[in-house]
Length: 286
Image (cartoon, rainbow, N blue to C red; front, side, top):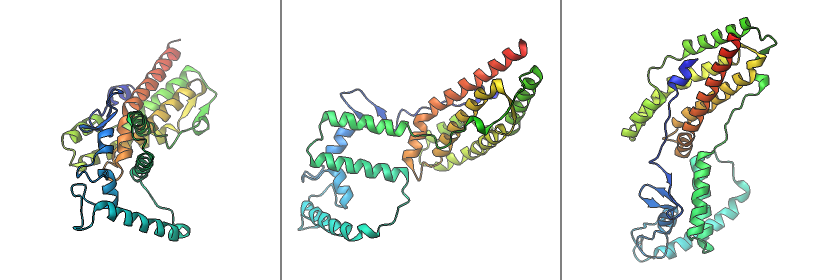
């Protein structure tokens, strides 16, 4: 079981996004959210992000010669309003990625704030905090309960030793990947265009799935049951993080969220493993 502590990778992203001090707000790349939200490159009174929504060129006041972008966008808004009313009852549910949902919510929020004249520094700070919290604190998709593990009412040294040997054999059998998650991610950071590198996470995902599955099947002495369950749930959280990293191409918000949570979950897994190991040692030495 010591392999868990030795091989858990710690990866913390500090480049894609960061929370700056209250004066600057959320930074993306080299610009604050405030600058991005209020940017109007062509000076036509329509913000760049809004021009992107309507398909006009933020570098030109007249994307279509002879028609100002403001007039063109007003027409598009009117047409969309009519279409929305007509299609309201016939809409079908969309299979949106987290990135799609996040983008829609963000743009809707910005549009509302802009229309109400509420884009000020306080609002930017609140929006920044909300975005960071949403990215960093997604809810685990799977949480195992005590009823999911096989508990035995046998806390003898023999039962505890058998449990320890069985758990060790599971990890020895399935943990065969030579590259760690951190190795793969560090390689990806140096060449972010090459998302093929992330395919190297697949063996780790498969191995971790098997470890969790086998750990649910073994007999666990009652005195170790909560520690065993904690180990499984923390393994599951890390598994979800690693799996979400594979979605960098198709759902970048989910991938960024995984990066934001990885360090915390890796640390939690190492702590739960240490507690279990220490408890087993104490029980076998008493």
